Amino acid sequence: MRVGPSSSLLSKFRRLIDRAGIADIDFADKFVAVKVHFGEFGNMAFLRQQYAKVLCDRIKELGGKPFLTDCNTLYVGYRNNALGHLDCAYMNGYNPLSTGVHTIIADGLRGTDEREIPVEGGEYVKSAKIGSAVAEADVFVSLTHFKGHGNAGFGGSLKNIGMGCGSKKGKMEMHSSGTPRISQRRCIGCGMCVKHCNNAGVHLEGGKAVIDEDACVGCGYCIAYCPKGAIMTKWDEAKPVMNRKIAEYAKAVVWGKPSFHISLVTDVSPDCDCEGSNDIPVIPDVGMFASFDPVALDQACIDAVNRQPITPGSAADVGGASHEAHEHDVFKLVHPDTDWEAGLIHGEKIGLGVREYELITV
Image 1 (tube, one colour):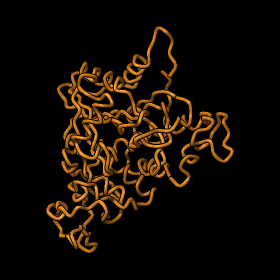
Image 2 (tube, helix red, strand yellow):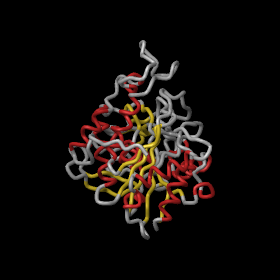
Image 3 (cartoon, one colour):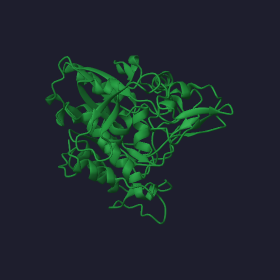
Image 4 (cartoon, one colour):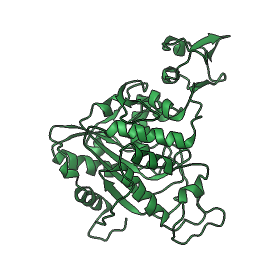
């Protein structure tokens, strides 16, 4: 990430994607979904929009029709619906005036606009629920901020692709093994969940919504239609299983269409850009990585992170962790109860990519 007076990070970024072979893709007159995390409002670690502009400008030079995209979140926040999501994206710089392209929320207004895509060889997911704009694009490109994550261990390409492109129903499937839960404090008894449930899985009782555990199929539509965010996933899926499901969703997104993946290992915060704030980076900035293989890309970024010295006073500086550069598991230091490797092992197993790689320095 170092530059001299005659260069810039953006020119280095452009050289990286060219050297990694982005021009080998036939972009001519193709719709190109560029998946990026716009950052929750208040977070300052997310990728700056200038990288997205350079990427989209290059795609347009190659004849493509790029758009920036992400799917709505399950949790209550700015990005829970398309209007708030767009407001947040624009406030964080991802607007057409800054990037030169349109921003589209892939799963629509409430997070229910999806396409079901079969997962070839899926062990946990047979049919992934992917945001329509992503599913219908001709080419898929991911632009990822590589950082930590409380559930997944780290947020890299697979997380950006798999979890990021799932509709609300898809995110529920990855996060939960069962039915949602209802906050009686938040519920106002409006009946929107009852109206939009196709399985009699929820009803009103004493002016409050109640889940019928026997009838509910865990589809998550009630989550999408609740105006108060009173219905939430139970977040009960085991973390290794969640990471394997993310890998299967990522395979559904990229399978059968050209794809290209970029990760920037900068501002490596301990937690996701979904948080409305961020802590200091756990390591120094490393660099930019690109590949056609998202599994190899994540493995290369993990290896690069674990070769860096730990930032004194950061979330990784625990238990007498050495500040010297050597092999250590930075993300295990930050989130010891996670199993980040499970997703990469599973991604390789189902044919999404391989963990072995050759690192070429540009």
